[in-house]
Length: 214
Image: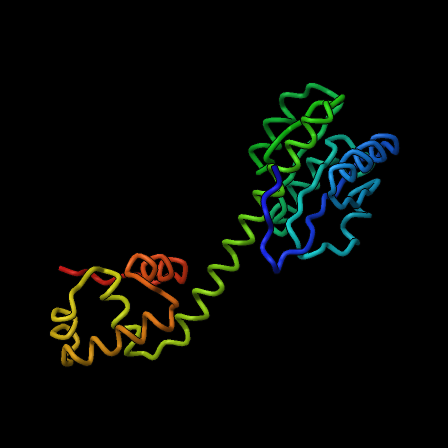
């Protein structure tokens, strides 16, 4: 089942690249029938000039295309194409399957593809992309809140997430324990952390490296 997407995410979309007009039309009809938005393209050049929406999405990509092949497109665009790719092929090509999966494809479907198999693969890919986007937002939020901390608060933070008690932090930084407590409370508030585990998770997302507590 398709997960509930975050409020900031609009309706997910499935992109299709297949040079067979009948297959494109069939996939388009099938996926729209389960409530998904679809954009279909005859080749990779058409896809590359299209506006990719900032929503959970995935790509159904045929291996063998006129012009640039699906595998060549995947290898060339891998660094800048973040959406999950599901390959389709009319041939039981083990070499192509292995190559696609090694390059990051999440599934490889052999035509003719059962309708439920397509739906399951697409929904899995969309959920995967939604989770990726959620992680990106969480990391961005954590980095933003960390950057709002004062230099002293950042010093306190790296000790706190390492498990150091207030007394040890105070001795390490040459400040009073009362000052540590005040800064610690401010750090918790600014990082939107209700507990130490919350603070540790937010710090990890922000890329904070704890100091040694020993």
